[in-house]
Image 1 (cartoon, helix red, strand yellow):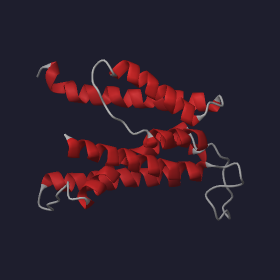
Image 2 (cartoon, one colour):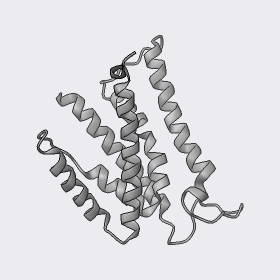
Image 3 (cartoon, helix red, strand yellow):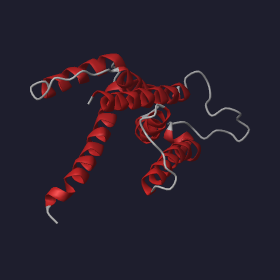
Image 4 (cartoon, one colour):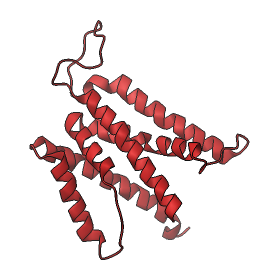
Length: 180
């Protein structure tokens, strides 16, 4: 087999490294008291300068505003690990809007359903099994009713922003299909 057969896999792996780099540098910038909204403006401007010569595009930045708010309120680990629910949300939205058909006798449909379950299960497992360490919190006492403590712990709000960000990203992906 030639290298051309592996091009999609290589590109997907490179994208994951880029996403990780953005997550880590974004978190570092936000910890230096940079506003998440200002960071998104800088990021969009740099993307415009790099991509504008190649293509004209229209982009909605609501998902990025929410995502970088997640990095500020929760952590880069939360942003990276829990954003893996985006494919599941995209699949569910595509199914509910009629863009995705499910045939339970089809191996493709079963794989999509299994992938959705794995995405959601992984996100839930990350929250339940790695919660205190993931969100840079001390171990909670067993009698704690809540998954967070005190007024400074903003990770729950960050996780809500993350769901919103994933939802917006999924809508953006679906809109691309509709307008292609």
